[in-house]
Length: 24
Image (tube, rainbow, N blue to C red; front, side, top):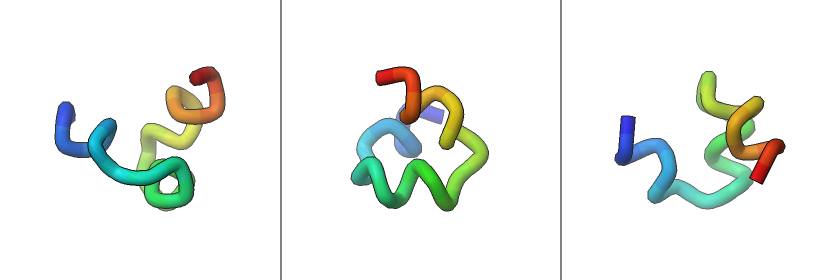
């Protein structure tokens, strides 16, 4: 899951972590 955080904000939107990325 750590790999997902390494991605850019735009990448996060494409992933299921979009909610987490939006919070940060």
